[in-house]
Length: 285
Image 1 (cartoon, one colour):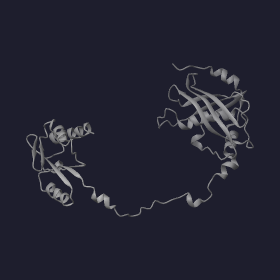
Image 2 (tube, rainbow, N blue to C red):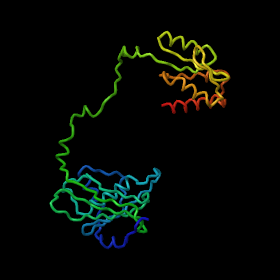
Image 3 (cartoon, rainbow, N blue to C red):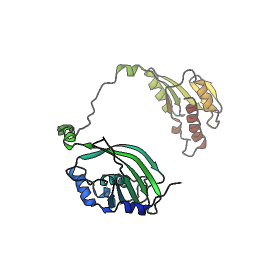
Image 4 (tube, rainbow, N blue to C red):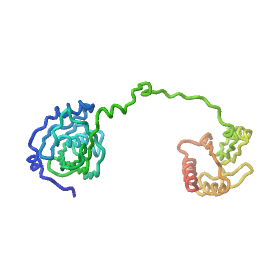
């Protein structure tokens, strides 16, 4: 069961209003320009070592468990714990120790960010955030959300100023097929139709030096000089066919039974044979 908090006590701890517009202007000065869809904070207050915000989103069409814009606004609450100005250095997130999610975030989320003082870690801060609904029921807890000082000039020096490399076009270059690709002979299992198409195809493949084993429809499972006959209505025949190929399995399969004039889309026998054949192949890896 999710815990609950005294939201009124949070309000007493954080009673100093913080201008959301001024905080956004500080972010914009450092190059973090949040557009309208990311401006989800509607209320923001500061206390001693803590801050309290109310975030709200109206578009729930994505069916998120954690709405990205809303969660980003919750994390930004930690920036209001101290009074930031445009002269302060940019701080970027570097770590998040744990995230406990009790249920999907509601449309309105209250976030209480507590930032205990730390000694000997200049330019680094960590906050613990508790997220709850209007009734004080906790929906998520973030522990160890850490940010570190990042000098703007250092970040800019890391950018590549050669704009020619920022855009690219994919060009396909024709290459001859390696000779060894032609020398690899295939063993084809041809589920042959009753017309001449299968015979013509087998002739072409044989002229290329490839081996073909024909599988035709029959009354029962049997071996033939050209391959096998199986009964499409017998669920054991595909398995027996795979067993017959245990030592020298085909490297490819050509399914031509659908070309027969008698095979309609609703033919239960043909459809079940396809399913059973696939199952037999799957069992044999």
